[in-house]
Image (cartoon, rainbow, N blue to C red; front, top):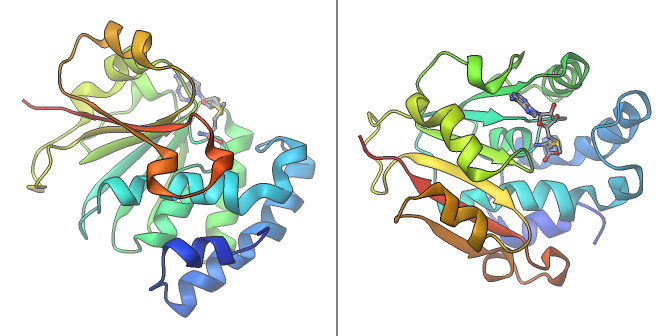
Length: 212
Ligand SMILES: C[S@@+](CC[C@H](N)C(=O)[O-])C[C@H]1O[C@@H](n2cnc3c(N)ncnc32)[C@H](O)[C@@H]1O
C-alpha cells in the first residue's frame, strides 16, 4: 500500500481536510527530497508506511489534548511532527532541528498544505527555551542524552491521565540503552503491537514519563 490507504486503515475518522493534507505529502516530499535529503532516496516510495504511519504510532500511545504543546526534537524533514500536526489540528507543535535547510523544507511543506499549528525553527534542542506537555523524537539520539536535553522543558499543566513526558521512536534492542537512563518508569511498546505490519520489525515506541 504505497498511499494514504494505510493511514485510513488505522485512523478511520479523518476529515476531508486531513485526508487532503496527507495526500499532498507524497508529491511534496518527493519534490523537496531532490533538493534536500530528508528521507533516504530508496524510501520515498514507502513514505506512508515507513514515515507517516510510523510517526502516527505516537497517537496510539497518547492522545494529545486540544491546546497542548509538543516539541519535536531533531525533526529533520518533519517526522514525527508534520503527520502528528495533521492528525491533531488543535495541538501546537514546535519542530526543531539544528540544520536550517531541513527546517526550510518543513516550513515550506507546512505552508503548502495549510498547517497553522506548526512552528519550525533552526535551533539545537539543548537551547530550546520553553515548556511543553510532551517531547517527541524519532531517530535522533540515545534516550539518556535526549532526557538530559529536554527534561526541564516538560510541564505538567494539562492534567493528562498519564504523566507528561518524552515519547520517542526507536529501533533495535533498547534494554541496554534504557538501563543507562536510570529510571524505573518507562514503557516500550513494539510497533507491531500497534499496527499489524511486519515492516516495522524491531521498532518500538518508548514513553518516559517525567514527574516533578
Ligand atoms: C536521523 S535524523 C532524523 C530526522 C527525523 N526525526 C526523522 O525521523 O526523519 C536526526 C536529526 O536530528 C538532528 N539533530 C541532531 N542533534 C540535534 C540537536 N542537538 N538539536 C537539534 N537537532 C538535532 C539532525 O540535524 C537530524 O536532522
